[in-house]
Image 1: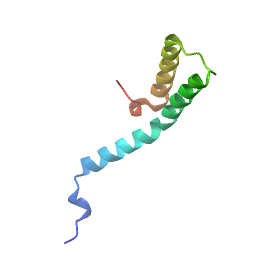
Image 2 (image 1 turned 90 degrees about the horizontal axis):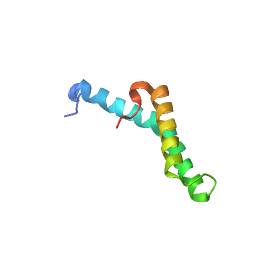
Image 3 (image 1 turned 90 degrees about the vertical axis):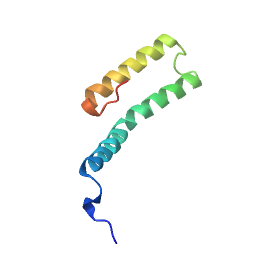
Image 4 (image 1 turned 120 degrees about the horizontal axis):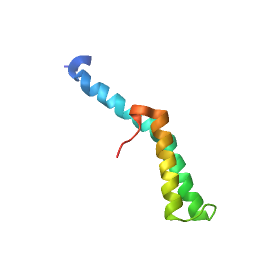
Length: 74
């Protein structure tokens, strides 16, 4: 017996597509954060809690502006 396409509820399919879209959309911001961390470790950026806070606030604001409802919320 094969499973019909309707064997998975529609809301679960939409939820999984939403989660996949969110993961893909937030990837550039994760890469930006990783690059900043690498620059700090390499000594190219200041190793300061205040600078890290400001950087994270700027990236979060950019992410929320560009992604809207797909942006992560804490």
